[in-house]
Length: 251
Image (cartoon, rainbow, N blue to C red; front, side, top):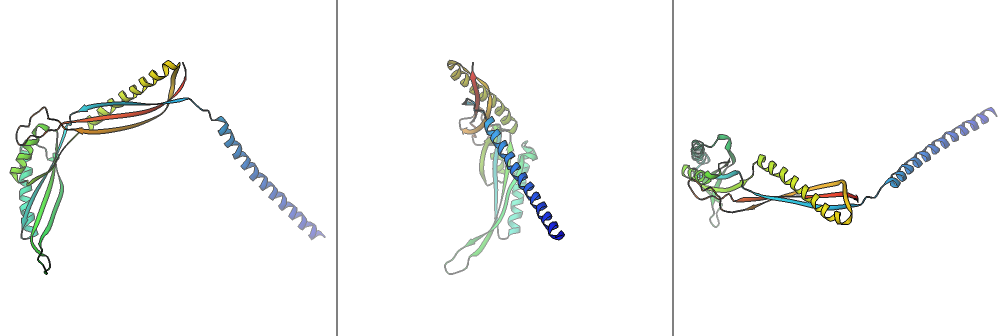
């Protein structure tokens, strides 16, 4: 009987512990549900207006980038590379003597590959090796674009891979900040124009999103090149759009 009484006591104790655990789970779930409901009940709807402000300006690029490529052919890879090295060194020296900084010139690519001749019924035959070297010249001397190309070609560059104009980081950031301010002002003015006749006003800003774009518009440059072919940097149109959501209320 004592053992049986002890067993019943143990089972009763276990049931009490289990009941307490289940009560804790229920309470925990109930607590979470209460918090969720409270959050939902406290959500306040606001009257808002979404306005888009825009600003743009036309600027002249201040950075010139030219890609110059030298090419040499020879019976062996080493001979092609030796000829190419001489040509490239001559181009670089000429451009530095013209006043460009060594930091304005960098290597973009160097390639050496075989050139084949194909005859019917026979395997391809290597006839010679071709070596190419591409330099990138980046400078703010836009008026000297034609002269840079002319001197590079005369010094050993075989062709111009590309000529590009862009904005420097400093100029781009300066213009961007100005346009951001102008676009935000444009949005504010538009919001006031719409709300004022309705007896409303903006209370605060709820959210802001920004987008920007740069579109090149090529036109004749004001400054003529000092030599070589005529190079026209043209102008670039930079625009910024700001979408602002305002919380509104009575005036």
